[in-house]
Length: 152
Image (tube, rainbow, N blue to C red; front, side, top):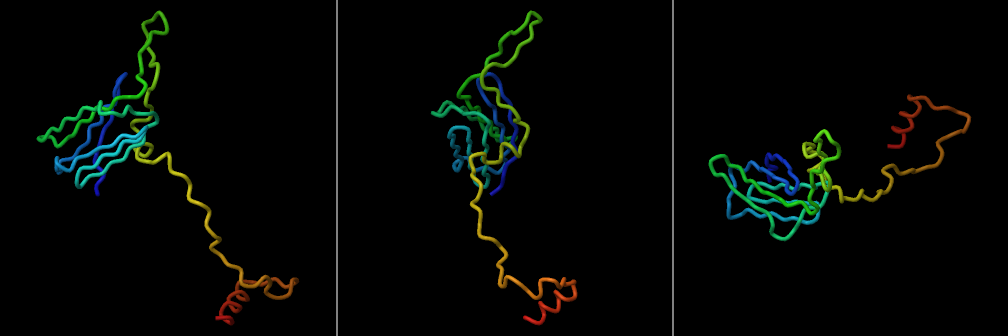
């Protein structure tokens, strides 16, 4: 499967995802939203994005496919809408609510933040004997090589 090129923008209410899929079969296209995770499949493409905040589920998305450009545009609704609110007399505005940060960090979006660390496995080195020779004798590299070849 191929990971398609994509770009993201946002406004107060929505995320706009533009996916470049020039060889997409429209009949195989499907996408799935669950919390902060978005999954897209259209043969031969697969894309899974994990956003920093929750997306609204329930069929509120809008899709549009431009055949000439080979681009699929999906407008996703934010679960908590951001609002612009004036905070001083100089007409400056700040976002209030959910602002999706780091949308330009592809590795952050493609990584699964819900993944747990794998369990610690057994040690890779097994001790066969607890001692080699005299405790007072230090072995140099040539002595260790001769010990290895004498056992094998």
